Length: 257
Ligand code: 6PG
Figure 1 (spheres, rainbow, N blue to C red):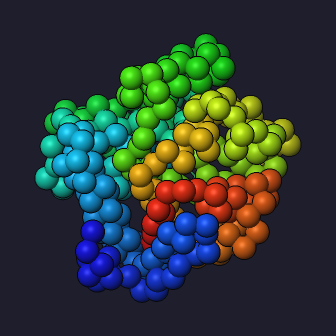
Figure 2: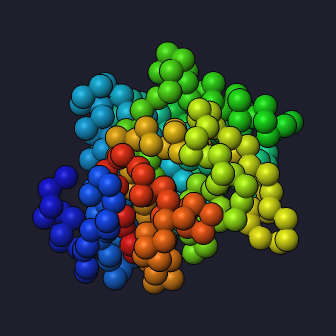
Figure 3: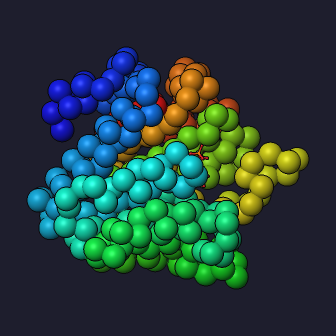
């Protein structure tokens, strides 16, 4: 990825302190500019993977922010039959449910799937979240001969409450998501009317750290301020995204639209 492509559209750029020193933040004052760069970053990561290893394996977030990225990827001239996409996390609902990230991603990426991209949902079983997480882990391991895979690209989102994936502030999962050997975990709904209101399935930190590149895509001033506050206070319970970035070995590009 040449810097001039990244620089052509950004308004502000700065680095965030992290052990790897690889957390670059690029702020775009227009959604179009941010989307332009997101497509370049995805294109660069998938093209590099395919040229080096013959295939690309990536995982994407749900929610609303990345949807235009999934929709616009069809403008890229990539060999989509050499690409596999799965998920960072998922709501534990049927894949045709309105709240399903699988539904959103499958619809947004339909042209890529028609061109041969493999899209694998984490919802491998809808009877029990624990069984579903176990089967989703088996899926991920099937990408690498039974071992934990490396993701050529992880596309993350973030909430204004500083959550990422399905790792939410104040949730008991924060006490074990860093130390577990599991790649995929069930997440109990929170009580008290806070998120997550639905049961979830999420990749663990061990799994997410096995990314060759991470792109965190957020929009709006509120999320940018939440990100800066999270990085300044990387406590897992208060700032899940801040704690994650503080230990993540992968290079991270943060795009703020
Ligand atoms: C989900 C996502 C979640 C998302 C953030 C941001 O299932 O909701 O995986 O982690 O990335 O909540 O969501 P928005 O992009 O809709 O703000």
